[in-house]
Amino acid sequence: MSSNLNSTEKAPYVLVLGMGGTIAGLAPNPEENLLKYQAGQVGVGSLLAHIESAIPEGVKLVSQQLANINSRNLSEALLSLLGKTVKDSLAHSDVVGIVITHGTDTIEETGIFLQLTCGKYAQDLGKRVVITGAMLPANAPNADGPSNLLDAIRWASTPIDNCPGGIFATMGGRACMAMDLAKRHGTALNAPLQGSPSSSVGLINPSWLSGVKAVEAVWTEDFPIPGEGEWPWVEILTSHVGARPETVIQWLGSKVNGLILAGTGMGGFHDAWKAPLDQAISHGIALVRTSRTGAGSTRPDIPEKDSAGCMASGTLSAPRARIALQLSLNAAKQANMVGKPLTWQDFFARIANLPEIR
Ligand code: SIN
Image (cartoon, rainbow, N blue to C red; front, top):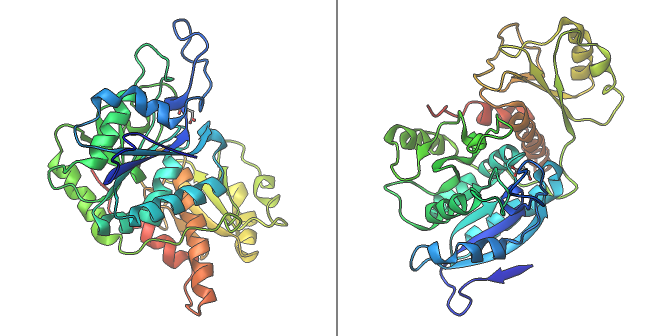
């Protein structure tokens, strides 16, 4: 479904893709309870109509509703559709930039997915893709969606100092690389950017910008977007007090392709997992270690030497590491099909070794 604002004269334009989320949510009793609401109720065309008078002069918008869901229900098939739509739209000479309205619960996964599949392409074209969302439903008295959406439209459409093309996000008056989104608070207004390296939307922080450029300098090739039915099966297991070997053993006879181990502290896991994880490797299951702490990095051979077949995630959180491993497994499979002897580790290392923005 697609709808146009300024349909009489629409090129060049910013494409606004609607995915749903709280930004498109409605609360039955907004004056009484803002925590009880349904995400994904309002169409993206209506969200834009609501802010039409504030849209910067000369900026034309075209909207397209890809989904209208609570993002906790986001599927891999929908990520494939989003990635393909972004890539195809970036290629269109009339599109100056892309904004995506998205639920914040899994915006972290979509952020890294778009960086790894479309980041280099957007950068080469000098176009910005900007994800945004909201923590309050659209009918809340102080809804944050309209200002977040306006910031995203400005970020996607206007020259900003010397900010390059790429995959970004805006929320709560701040901007970050979309791969740095991390919702680490259930209700705070700026939750997806809280604690992420970011800059004020109004006044670009030069050290953040040089971090963006450092990441973009080493991200030299996008990964292929898996087709709808091609996503490798990867699960996340969390190590904890009293962790049992059965948590790992149950996957040994399954078709699972990879496991993300959300370990304690620096990414260590319970000794009870050691033997079944060695078996998992011998079954051809890819392993990635990360930390359940939600911050910091997981380094190779710390706290213990890694087995061959298990990689440390660098700064990737468990949800991001999961997407990164899926894309790496898929990229290796595609490379092998054309005779290139590359492994998932070759691809994953490119992601885990990206520079950290401070
Ligand atoms: C969702 O992720 O769709 C609901 C929560 C939110 O957008 O903040």
